[in-house]
Every structure is written in C-alpha cells, then in structure tokens.
Length: 174
Ligand SMILES: [Zn+2]
Figure 1 (cartoon, protein in one colour):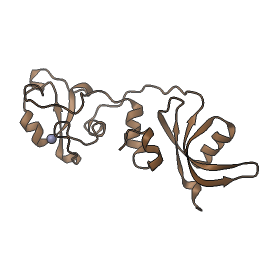
Figure 2 (figure 1 turned 90 degrees about the horizontal axis):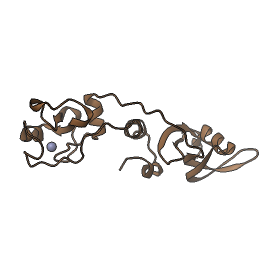
Figure 3 (figure 1 turned 45 degrees about the horizontal axis):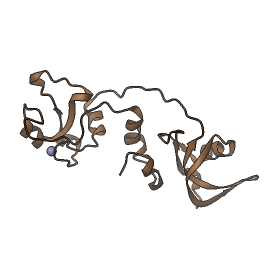
Figure 4 (figure 1 turned 135 degrees about the horizontal axis):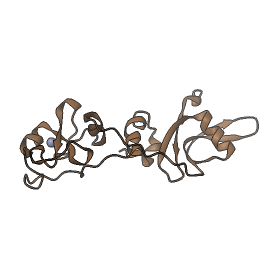
C-alpha cells in the first residue's frame, strides 16, 4: 500500500469519545511519544529507522482532554443533521427539502422553536399531527428533542464522510 500516508486516523479521548481526525504521520508521532495508544490497526507495517509499527486506524489519548462545551447553533439544517434526516414519526429518511420542523408542543399553544421542542418530520406526518401534541395525535416520536452535544454533532458531520469501517463502533454511525 503505497499511499498509506494519506490514511486518516480517528483520535479518541481517554474516555473513548471521538474528538478529532488526524493524518497518519501525526498519529504515528503521538504513538511514538506515548501520548496515545492504538485501538484499531491494520496489517500494514510502517517502518522507520528505530521502530516498526502497524498502521493505526483508531488511536486513543492516554490522558483525558477537556473539550469545551460549546453549544451547537440552532438552525433548521442542524436539526435535520441531529435527526439524521429521519422523520421522527414514520422513521423514514428524507431529503432536506422533504422535511419540515415539527413543534412537539404546537406553536399555537406556546411551543417554542428551540432544540428541545423541535423535531424533523416529513410533510405527511407533520400534516397528520397538525396542531396537536404527539400524544393527542397518537404518534410516538423516535426520540425526544434535545440539544445535541458538540461531540455528537461533530461525529455526524465531520466524521461521517471520511469514516473508516474500523471507526464505526466509536461513532454514532450505522
Ligand atoms: Zn414521516
């Protein structure tokens, strides 16, 4: 494998939370320095003057790094990403244009447009639910709405495009 240097490596916090993606050179440096240890590796042996090491796919920091708890900005797009473009009532996946933001507690009854009152819903489900609560409409939401953590959000956005098979058990991906 000649292009192993272009491999991306998933970096986990000491707590196993995925926090970063780095290139393999940086990952190897961290391993050699003892800052991180290998969680998943390939069969490919990388040789340098003083060491030989298997090409890592996932590494984990030995020391826990505090990640600042920045809130994820509330927006229509970010709600769809949080809900993985899945209608929370019929569980089908739709394109952005086919989804609407449903107010769990209807707006007409004081429901706010916030992370914890808004869910992705397809147009059909939104129409059926109308100005009712899920209970009144006999509909069950897949999840109750909540503000996503920055880590969860990063996993859905930054990591999902480049995710290697071996990363999946560390990410909220299926
Ligand atoms: Zn639906």
